[in-house]
Length: 469
Image: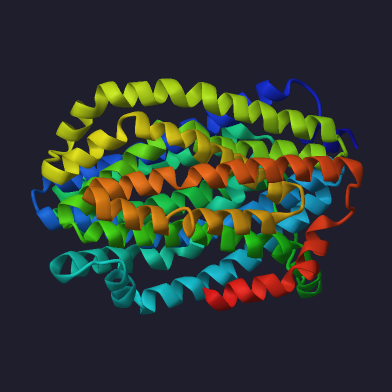
């Protein structure tokens, strides 16, 4: 009993301290990976082949899709583990984690096979042509088959965060970052493997993520339960109730990104390369916001499971304040570093213009992106993951397509970036209001099994969304 209580670490103590601790440790791990990703782009640009940077940009859009699917399944695992720990059921948490991993890997095998079989069509759909497309496809052919490995690593890492093991989750990503950082220059330059070398370095890094996360789960938190088809069948409903809408919600972002990439492709490879650089600078600059979306989930989940709704609301509101405090100095730093960033990648013409535009007041819109991230974490851990589905699809359709389209008409390539950044403002306001209402209703009449109820109540909606996809 006491061990179980120790595991539910977020039920007591300062919530602000918990949020900052979880976010900072996660951010350090993320930054390690994102810096390596940035170094990838830097090494590739040093090869002096114009099409390579654009190829990485196109490939990144497809990989974003596979990663988002994996994160969607991890959201289900993290939410269910955190809720079980909050309910003082550590054995149930272990069982659910095992079943989420099994279901996740099975889904990843099927999804990766479908993506692999259609790489030519998918890269063409987002605007890749000629040699650039061929390079993107060769890069993806190496990385896409490792999606099941990535799925294991992301799910196990999410479980570590749900246990409150922020430092262990950080070590998982730090180790992966070190592996990639060491292998990148060896494969790209020493072995003269070029773009394919960068891909193989990432493959080995993915295996290190999975191995390290599983090792920590096994050594520190009881590992996994034995295979039981009956138990897996029983847990499919609560897992699917969160995983389906979470995956649908996460798929919305790469779909929106694909539209932006295609719109930017109209202005040439240089514009796509500029967006690829921005795509790698962004997660480093705003790592704490990316991390906070994962850090706040377990805190809300444990307190919701324990019925401590006042701490749920305080966690949410504290996150909003921290987002604002964080974004302003980061934007100021980006503004003063815009020239060195552009010079680092030898960005010229439209690519340089896009980097300068991003590294300025336009990036203040990340406050609203942060609101959406945290609100989605609240929906998933309060048993209403389908809210994040609608919010994310709204953000990446109504909040992207018209803004990007008209932005491109009026301001060209820069208008595409402006449209992408500004479109989320209205969606963020709606998501904040919806989260506030959900927390109030949960406090008044908490549902015993909101995740299962959500599946049946909204199964027709899921079918419609799946059909449209």
